[in-house]
Image 1: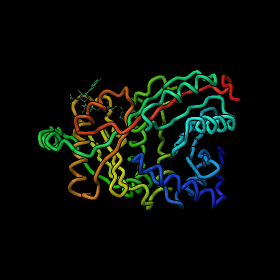
Image 2 (image 1 turned 30 degrees about the vertical axis):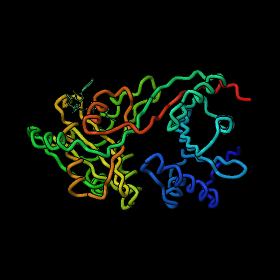
Image 3 (image 1 turned 45 degrees about the vertical axis):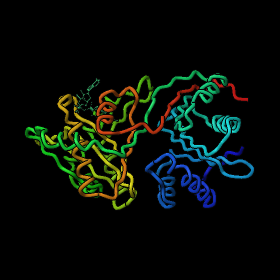
Image 4 (image 1 turned 180 degrees about the vertical axis):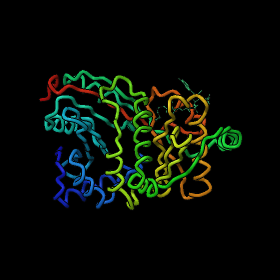
Length: 328
Ligand SMILES: CC(C)(COP(=O)(O)OP(=O)(O)OC[C@H]1O[C@@H](n2cnc3c(N)ncnc32)[C@H](O)[C@@H]1OP(=O)(O)O)[C@@H](O)C(=O)NCCC(=O)NCCS
């Protein structure tokens, strides 16, 4: 097994990387299928993004992606196509050996049913394995329309203003409307801090108006970032949101959040139901919606199951300390 680092000047390897992605992502029903240009852009813009191609003698079998989110934290996202256990271990050892950071968080999607061999291996090489997050990827193919319609018909909005926005409009507002971008940064920071993620040592994400503006100017006009955002506003204050990224026939739902003081009044249920009805009327091309939930996030799981979401596969996050590793 060979692990090849993708360099942003290496057109050929980038093409090979994209080809594996093309094979893997539909199987995962993953929405962020990157175009060649977007991948190059990401590599140039984002110096924390690192990619590898995993290949055997006869074929490319997978890829690894990692982002250094701060000085010591590395996240490996690993996707393997038809790789036997022994080869998986070899590839993983090479990747771990190549990292300099002390604390390593390995993220991988588990669509092979049995994750135990991998976990066992991490323990064998001396890692103290902490499962810090256990995400479910959920898919919604058959919406519980009865519930959705009832919720939207009967919900008492009580002075809240509910609105639907498209990505480019939101990006433009980030650039033009200082008050809005500051409010959004505050809302995102506050709700993100409450997403349960077990014992993760990752600090909650801090969103600033500056970061959102930068992101907006990089992404505006790019069809890869096409989404609808449903907002609930209370006198200029954002109190709830839900977002659906639009990718062909696939929608990906995220950024569902309600400010603490507005929780427990079914606002999240209402916003998600509202977005599904909006999609039915305005985006009939969307055939299914995916989302990701931390397994310990009881309210959002309950809500998603009521709407008709079903589990597709797991996503695991394992924390390791490099100094503990014994890799031959
Ligand atoms: C998750 C969140 C959006 C829910 O907002 P909300 O408006 O309070 O949600 P709802 O009132 O619509 O409640 C959803 C369901 O969860 C249930 N619920 C609420 N708290 C719960 C708890 N601690 N345990 C189990 N179920 C709970 C509610 O009873 C409701 O089910 P019901 O309709 O059968 O009664 C909100 O808690 C939040 O912003 N959390 C932080 C951000 C986050 O985790 N977002 C999701 C990321 S995937």
